[in-house]
Amino acid sequence: MSSALTDLFPHPIVQAPMAGGVSVPQLAAAVSEAGGLGFLAAGYKTADGMYQEIKQLRGLTNRPFGVNVFVPQPEHAESGTVEVYAHQLAGEASWYETELGDPDSGRDDGYDAKLAVLLDDPVPVVSFHFGVPSREVLDTLRRAGTLTLVTVTTAEEARAAERAGADAVIAQGVEAGGHQGAHRDLPENDGSGTGLLSLVAQIREAVSVPVVAAGGIMRGSQIAAVLAAGASAAQLGTAFLATPESGAHALHKQALTNPLFARTELTRAFSGRPARALVNRFVREHGPYAPAAYPEVHHLTSPLRKAAAKAGDAQGMALWAGQGHRMARELPAGRLVEVLAAELADARTALSDLPRPGGDPR
Image 1 (spheres, rainbow, N blue to C red):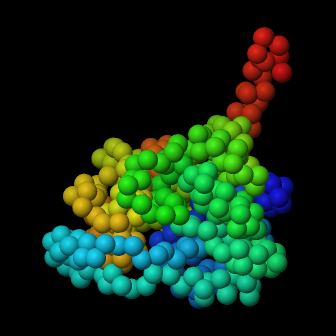
Image 2 (cartoon, one colour; image 1 turned 180 degrees about the horizontal axis):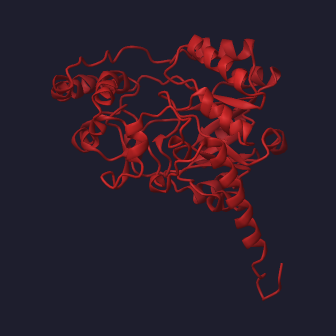
């Protein structure tokens, strides 16, 4: 199955699906055309919106690509916590001259409707975030000719994905930008994530399915490192966020290398789920008080984030970014794939030239 996945794209480079308008068809097409695996993000879109993007992408490339879907979340928010957070955000709404969003706008992100589209008109790869789909879903997609991947953050989650029938897992290290894909959102686990290299090693010993490594990867030498650790490919998000094809807001792209935003942290401030973002005013002021309530908090803050972007205020935006954000390069996406592939080749050559233990050459 490792070859079934990696045979789809010449370079072991996967463009991470970044929801919220970043992973547009133009970006996915450029990556796939250059020999990587481009991805669309179905999160926060309607089923028809997802279908229209798939249709547009197919008009831009004949190469394989993937679509990412959010698994519906169980209700677990403590009663009253969202209302308390809404009260705290009232000043933000006043400042940006907007209303807070309705926290009860929906929990399943159109999951069943999106699966129906993906089964009616199959795509090469579908990945899942925030949990493991049922075996029935994964088996049905496989019969349709689709390879399935599940994001995992622990060896236990990887075993669960393998038992359910996933073709591969995406090992997401704590370094990754955006939302952590933990299958259970437990506040007591905040800050306890595992670094990518350790996670890949643990998962390789836990499951037999292929592993795609994700989290903080910005250079070809890092891809070489995760491949050496046992991964079949590397998934990069922040590295592609800065490309001209990315749908990210211009202020978001600029913030990646702006000295004003010196670091990232995992925060619940914008969505109620841990997600790595550049630390700005909103994160500092509201992160410590945001409840574990996804997607309620996501819906609640959505108008604020849109208003901040419209006002050109990066201090109120959700600036998702991995720990390697300062290494972002403003290259066209296709060119970035080529550069990463060349760096990977150089790193592999350097590794092959190292002497064996005892001084014997390789």
